[in-house]
Length: 205
Image (tube, rainbow, N blue to C red):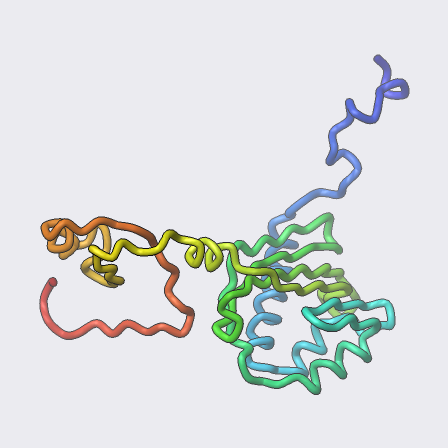
């Protein structure tokens, strides 16, 4: 079979795409993404604006707003509350295509919306002024982990459910105390992002 007669199915699905994830390019986008994340949490509006492409073609779909053009995006940021912006990221994926185009995707969780899972996608393009976001999409869905926890069977009235941290966790030094009393692991929970655990002075538990 000659190349001219080859069917589309026989070609590599990536054959027409520029080189993916050139290390130095992906590192540049990752650095720009990290700057954006730090500015978002700090509500550093100037930096956030600087990282978006200043053009009427830039579009951002948010959780409750559709913003067309840089001016609308900047106006939204200027009027947004600075409270409740703290968040933790999960499964962040940054992929570059060639040397001038990339996509950044991440999941996020906020204490202020504990039952929701956030999803964020950004399209980045290299400009004469550096890497800029030219399109973005943010949305919230019910958090599958929270839904799974709330749908668990009702607790056995003859049992006491206990949540533990530190040395009583599975595989830790004091876990045997729980097992010796007939304890069984029923579920694993995610610690809230604003939780703090202080280690007391002294030897091993």
